[in-house]
Image 1 (cartoon, rainbow, N blue to C red):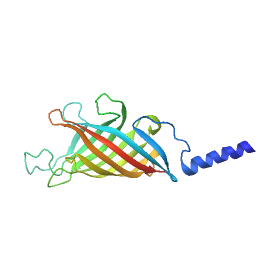
Image 2: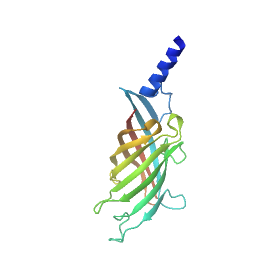
Image 3: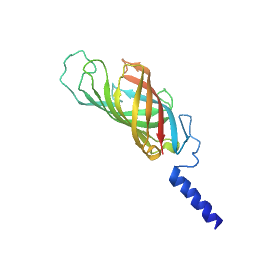
Length: 186
């Protein structure tokens, strides 16, 4: 009888409040209790390659160019499949991918509207994802982006991401962005 009560209580705690004890995670993410919810802080790097056979973006809709010298013309739409790694180096540990689309959404300046799903393949976060949907002023060295949901551990997530350009090489077409993401979820 006592064993049944303990089993029932463990099941109740797990189903009512999420995981009672989160296992240790790697250095790039940490989850802790936050009242009746959890807070997860993730730090990782996003790698985009826009030139060559290893390109991680593709132009899927092209607007009529207004200025032939404009490298990011208003109205262009791109599909993305970017790598997420622990560190900024190209050979750093792969922890996931960012997949979705972005488009040039500004007639003045360089601002994109993006919808990307950041999905993970590492540790307890394997199979979980969160979504960013909003404006990205990509030439600003630091920008804040909204998190609007998620799956797996991040189901019903809300929060924000601080994105900071780590490296931008026009010649190679490589952009590396550091992310610090704060998520609140059940």
